[in-house]
Image (cartoon, rainbow, N blue to C red; front, side, top):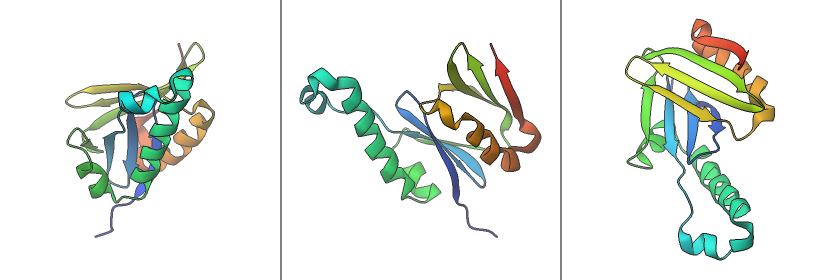
Length: 137
């Protein structure tokens, strides 16, 4: 059996990162910085939050898929067998991803909209016909 590896980590504008592996998607909590951390950067709170999340994502990138899953009790996985459809789409100027699974639907705003096409290129081989083309709303 092949070892599971991380293929792509998509940073969202919220407190989550979407980790796509060879077998599943892992939704990882990257959280929010503490109030004390943010207070130190008060005039630049948004920048401080982005830097903090960036550090958390770099830590996640060093972990195995199982390590990512167990790094936070709020992290969870959705196997590709459970995924019905993944849509990459545009709403006004925002790039979004919607994952429809058998049990739930997850929708996130992408933090790096310039990577939109690259995300589709990496996901296409593992999701095949479950990946819907880019739609503009």
